[in-house]
Amino acid sequence: MLRCRVDFPRGDNRITSLSQAYRLDPGTGWDVPPGVLHALGSLCTYEPQKASDIFSMYQSLTGDRIVPDSLLWKDTPKPRVRDVEWLMEIIDWDLNVDPHFRQNRFMAPRPVRPSEETEPEGYRENRICSNRRRSAPRS
Image 1 (cartoon, rainbow, N blue to C red):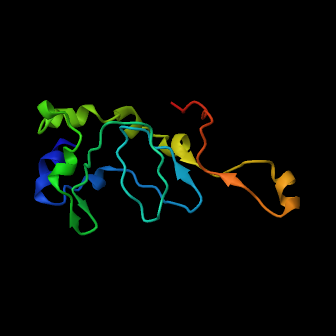
Image 2: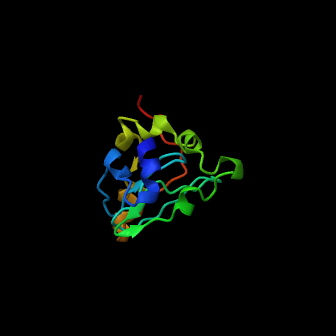
């Protein structure tokens, strides 16, 4: 991970080689809390986020475009700019290495009302994102 940071200004730091990838399916979602490294997918997505005062772009190449170094340090407190250790500190390592990330963070559509109530009226209504408390993550 530190090597990826050092290689950031050189072009492709290959950080995505270290990450798990998941297929994006239309009509589904993911719960991605602050501190979880993630990248844009191949679909147009809706990404609600919890309040966070930090934006840091760890991936140095997207498609064929080099990401400016300024996005890596965008919201870094001035005394910590260029402090690679700070970049490591703001990552939530437990969440990033969760072996059950898909089971704990994938959001399948949930009916707003039971289908027995809506289907006779000619529709189904699902929600992907919900502020209902999720069940406790597996450990």
